[in-house]
Structure formats: structure tokens, C-alpha cells
Length: 129
Image (tube, rainbow, N blue to C red; front, side, top):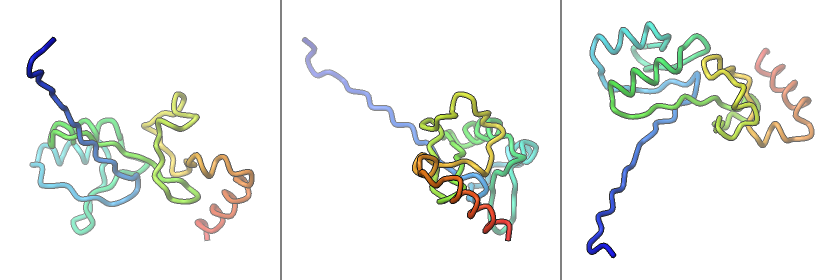
């Protein structure tokens, strides 16, 4: 039996950022900034940064982890209800190519709705107008 056992608790912060939404970063330095731009991170002097369909999410996450020492996870929003989607719980997770995330993902609640096709169609028409 151990006397005075030492408990080590390791906490890893993961920053979850929605795809196609602006977010702020601290100044990272010219090299990191240039690498992020090459990887497709979008920058606006006033709004900050965002990832879009042309962004290499894996490369951007890796660069940010090196620059800040924190994990970044880019997550899609549900096309219908705009809730953040937990990719790991998605039925298509194993066959989805994270590099090609689409803005047309559906959350579990919406995809399991019996009227999902009708709701999706109405949402699409609304977003197109």
C-alpha cells in the first residue's frame, strides 16, 4: 500500500472554433502568420480569422498548436439549426474527410427528424434567397 500517493492531473484545453465564424488570435509572429495564410486561414484586420471550405484544417490546427501550445478543433455547424456538431458522434465520422468539411452537415437532432428533407429544403431555399 502506497503512503502519500501522488496524483497527477493533466488537463488539456481544446479550443473549439466553428467553421466560417470569425475568431481572434494573439499576435503569433510573421512566420506563423504566413504559414497560416498558406494553409488557407482567412484574415481580416477588423474581424480576425476564420476557416472556410478552402482551408486546410489539419495544417491550421497543427500550426496553431505549435504557436500557442493548445489544441484547436474546427467544428461544423448544423445547416438547419446552427448548433455546433460533435463530429465524433456523427454516423459518417469514419468516412468523412475532415479536410473537405461541408457547410451542409446536420446534427443528430436534425438528421433524426422524420421531416428532415422538408426542413432541409426550406432552409436551403431560405439561405439561397
